[in-house]
Image 1 (cartoon, rainbow, N blue to C red):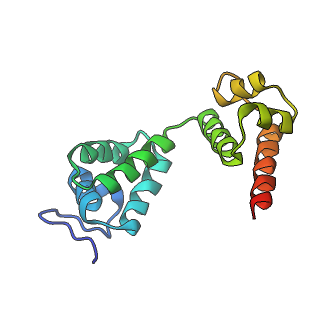
Image 2: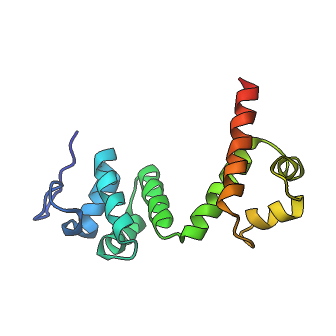
Amino acid sequence: MALRFRNLEVTPEDSVDRWGAEGMLAAIDRGGADDWRKIILAIQVAPYGPVAADLEEALELAESRGSAQLLRSALERARQTPEQRVIERLRMLAFETDLGQGDLAARIGTSRTRLNSYLSGAVMPSAALVERIAEVGRIRRSELV
């Protein structure tokens, strides 16, 4: 069922920046993936802009926990620095290898303590190191198949 706004002078077809917090709340509680996608695109463009502020207000009042969590996560991701995104990706890749830090470090040619400094964000890894971990993950997945 298509999203409809009640008691608002805007429609879901209008630009998201015109929805306000009430429109955002309706989209969170009664909308669907297409509506949420519009919001996510707007906050990716301006993570601290008016749409993001309206979204923050609506999230405080939302009843739909699942869609609210999805949009909260999207807002947090949009506000991450590039360095934070790299560290998050590195952690995900390391987790997906299903190896302990010592084993993973040995496979990528570094020490466990150095790998830990990358995973903790204390040291920014090179792109080559990120790709080595991704390759270990691909090899591990192929071994399991």
